[in-house]
Image 1: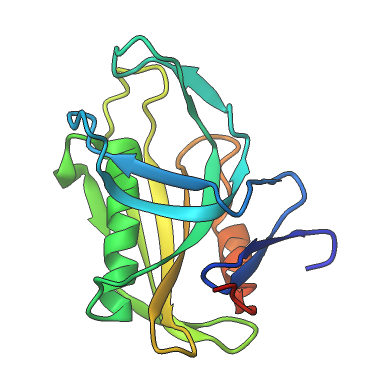
Image 2 (image 1 turned 90 degrees about the horizontal axis):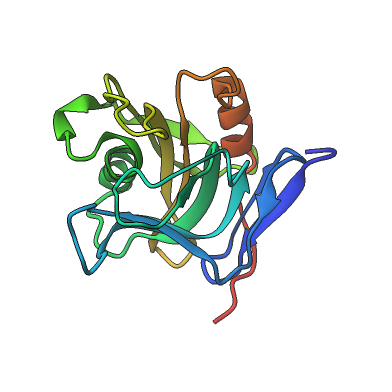
Length: 195
C-alpha cells in the first residue's frame, strides 16, 4: 500500500501493511492477554511482531493492582497455531479470545463470534476469517470499552497453520473503520522466514 508501513514477522514468514500512524514493534515483541484473576498471567492468546495504533490511547489501573496499564486503540500481529485443528477453528478462537481477554472479562457471554468465512488476500493466500465483538461491557473502569477482533488463519507452504489478527476498541469516535481493517487484512502475505 503506498504510504503505508510494512510489518514483518520473520519467525512466521508473514508480512502485512498498516497505515502510517501505526507504530511498529520489534520482531521479538509479544502482545498477549491473560485472565485478570491469573497470578501467573498464562496467555489466553497472543501475537508477535505487532503494529499498534495509539498505544497510550487510554491509561488506568482498572484491575486495582497499583499499576497503570495502557489500552491501545488497536493492534495487529501474527502467530503460529500449533494446536488448531483447522484454519476455521484458529480464526474463530483467536477472535473470540482476544475480545474476551482485552475487553469482556470476566463475562464470556458478552462476546459474540460471527460465522467463519473463506477469504483470499491480494497475494493469493486463501484461508478462514472470523470476527468477534463484545457488547455491553459495563464501563466500570476508566478504560472499559467494547472491542472487536478479526482473525485470519491459513496454512503456510510448510503445511503449518498460522494466523493474523486485528484487535481494537469498538464504538468510539476514532475506532478503526471496518474497511481499513479489511484493507490491512488484504495485504497479508508470505515472506522468507528465519529459522
